[in-house]
Length: 447
Image (cartoon, rainbow, N blue to C red; front, side, top):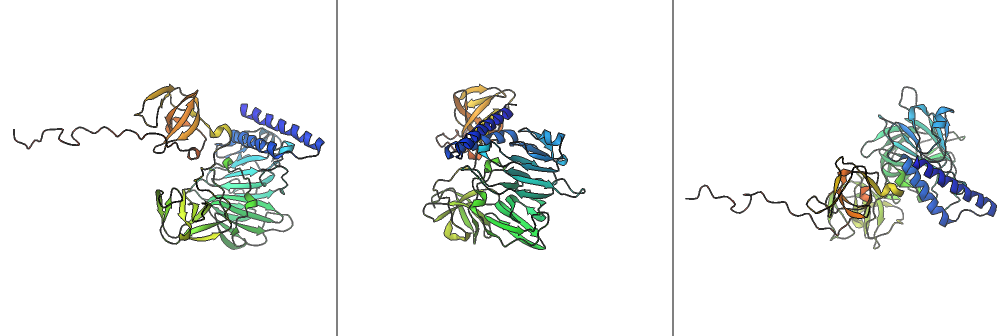
């Protein structure tokens, strides 16, 4: 209930801002827009992140739903869940901060077609799967024209994502997708654009195949405003247009990903992937020849590229060792960025799951001194993670210490927490008597 009330308060505040804007004749300021959007993303996260498979979840303003009546009414409230099989169509309203509307919804079909679709802004979906197929295996998508009046509002988009390493086959606007990763879909102006944020997806239409790699996009043509059947095959893959994914709230995805730069790189031989842009940095792994990788950014010298494998692992590679099919690289940094974190409290809190309570330790290991015992069900604030084991630093009512990750229930992205390097290593284990030196008499020695 508190999640729904939180969202209603936000919408009422934004609606009040819309009245002011209409009377004053000016759009909402950028300074007011950023926190309003952050609150919207946080409220939607609280409503729908971690939702179950087999359901549609509304994370924003009431969508238009077919069939009318009980099904539509059931999805009117943020956090509402309705089984995917009883929803025939859904349309979310525009992300109009000044008007107090926020179209956000999650579509999570169940096996055998496991994927999550996130509707961001003005997006219309219709289930056109034949009766003998699972619900939502074939979808008609249409996205509204982009007219953001507030800085930071992303383009209208339908984002589809498979679980890591679990590809699936679906059809969108008559195009067959061998989906393996994360793809942004926009359907407007008699074309559907498919843009890959992660993984590789096979796109098939009008008897033609194209392999869509991370950092690329393809488009498929239509005629007469109908997106049910394409009138041609997919274009050759092109470099990702940054405007297509501008300000996309990737932390709303079940598996948040960093938006890649345009294009990709490939290894031509075995190449070291390092923890930082330096030959002195630790080698994370040796990547064999023939691997295609997304580019997340570059260092300030331009000599190193920050790359991501399809497995999700990231690191740095010497640029001159890679075959490059790239556009301009706008992300420039020397310190490796953290992955996207959940919005709001969801990215900062965890609940204790230990019936007998859990011991808060001074440092990240059971050998370190006890600070206090935290009861089951208590909430803690996440602060950092350990550099050498799966422990996290937390704050419990002002007491700061370390907990094993297995004792926590959280939707926060643990990899997105900063690493606390100011911790001592755990003490070495006590040696077993007799495993070293001459702890026992030699039985072969004379008496």
